[in-house]
Image 1 (cartoon, rainbow, N blue to C red):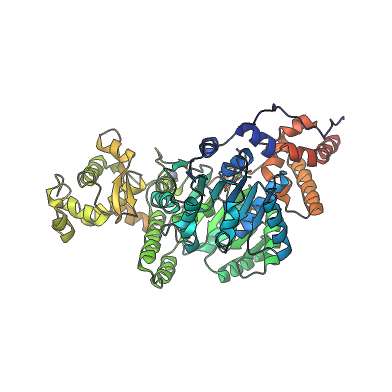
Image 2 (cartoon, rainbow, N blue to C red; image 1 turned 135 degrees about the horizontal axis):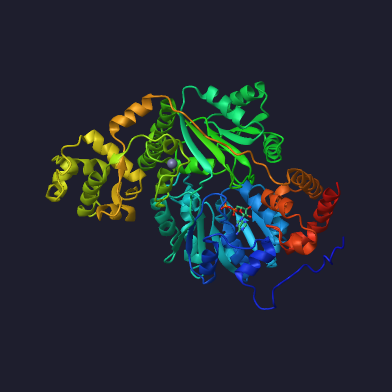
Length: 617
Ligand code: ADP
Ligand code: ZN
């Protein structure tokens, strides 16, 4: 077989300024953008501000990395996660892009080199921690560095409604004050509507446009199991997933250790991971998991940030997470390859009490209220009798039309009755109040109760006052929660928890959409009877599994030689695509997903030879 001259990789671009698609192709080796990457990029390139919401793994980074390559000057990325910063910079350098990071983990020497590169204008992207950004004199220094774009990653940290508020993020509004001409793109994977509005307001963005990509992950099955018999259920899951990769999230370090020992005792290749492990051990566990030497990690939430492993087949929550955002981010680590993956949440009241206990100790009353409100939403999810995916999607303000068929409620549905008229009564009252009713007051209005909240605001004059007096207050609370889960109403956490009508809710009001409800009695009965799970799993059988193993070996060797993590050579997704395409020459190699010019030059020869060698056998 002949190799073409690797010094001249195939190139299809002319000499004029490359388009963003050409940049994507050339530097990252991808053939197309995912929605809404291209829209964000074009918007930012016009010098405008943006708020970007994409689920974990959706591809947020390219939304600022491609503009960084297209624009003259320096792009500054603010990120709170030191480990993630390092991975991103490694990956960029792996694609031949001049990037660096500044944070507390660097030695004096390393820091000096980077500062020099900065002064010489050699860097395209600089990642900094917020602490570092606000260090004395650093902003002044940036003023001389021709900054062309700011990207604020994990932007939900700016909002006290976010699940991981960081006080230092509050000061980021200084960016727009000091650099009014420089566009800012704020990105997050977890934000309900309240947080999303906060991001734009608190950063002081100029008429930002919000871009939302779908949060739907239809390949993840969703199930909630009672917390009583966790170990038995886990044993069953282990049998179903013999040899598959999975993560079990626990809420304490002690549980991770105990659970890992129990799993090892039944022959599962398991280990534990938490923040108290020394960094070396943590790195080892993480690498062994990524390489498939360890199958199951029992971990606290410290595990998973920035781990690029596409074939995680199950995520189990041994304990109830405190927020829907956190839960969704964690289950999102399963099934990134798009193949079926299973998620199971164990729900016990003891976990709710643990969370409440921590909440009670919070001093700031506003923050405490947030924590409790978020926990309530998580509890409602765990207790829900409507399609769980619809609940998740409506939580992220994404209207989804119908039940998913891939959650435990859909697979074993309760009986529904036609609740359209009930929904219309509630929604109409919300509309007539000017969307100024929190849930409890809406119940008063529907029941026709003259509570102080009603009298003080004159809500007794609403035409539908008392229109639901024949339904109990208890039932109304349950129904209204179902309307929220179905995405007909939304809670505005920033404005006194007032209920807002969504476009789906408007359609119900106009009689364009029927509403199925579950009676409160059914809810009680179902909670009392044991739940069944009936998931079916396809074994992941990559067409050329043994070639894939060969390619993975080669990747490991090359990464070791370079002293870099494996993903800097190629991602799992690239190797899988390579094993399927089996390129025969450098042109075909360049067509593999994730192979840009730089990587084709750097690794093409070795991988092509390995494929030829494999073909001979
Ligand atoms: P996020 O920050 O949203 O969690 P990343 O930006 O890290 O996600 O991207 C997740 C993965 O998807 C990365 O491996 C990335 O290279 C890949 N990816 C992103 N955009 C594309 C695209 N347009 N085509 C193919 N792969 C992509
Ligand atoms: Zn469902």
